[in-house]
Length: 155
Image 1 (cartoon, rainbow, N blue to C red):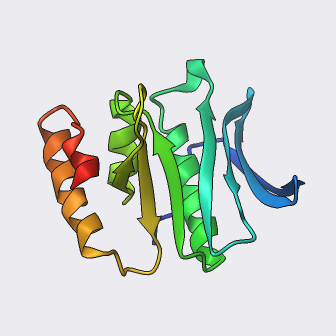
Image 2 (tube, rainbow, N blue to C red):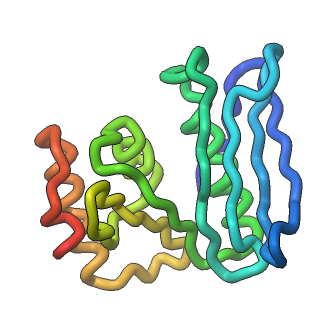
């Protein structure tokens, strides 16, 4: 399990909200200047949720706030016995891809179209399908080589 290690002088707030009949668990990381990072998990009432709209204030980026917020989300998801946490990320967002990969997320699909977002998942049960394990190896190689290609999602 991920160690609780919020940056100095920060506080984590969680609040459950209902939007169009779906439960959203909101997470906000605050410091002395206010909210520095936020996101929410859509579908909190379901066995697995979808991480949405991670945002770190531009002046607070590259300081570990996003990583610590995602770790807090993972801890909360695990504590609620969820089976998985999913998200999407732009293929050219290497900072995010590396962060999510370090935290255990794996690419399992690439959407068609101009942007071709990667869909990633963090399995909380330890029972990843073999195809996802293979895609994780390909992603590790691509990240180590400095790029992520479409072959990751095609497996």
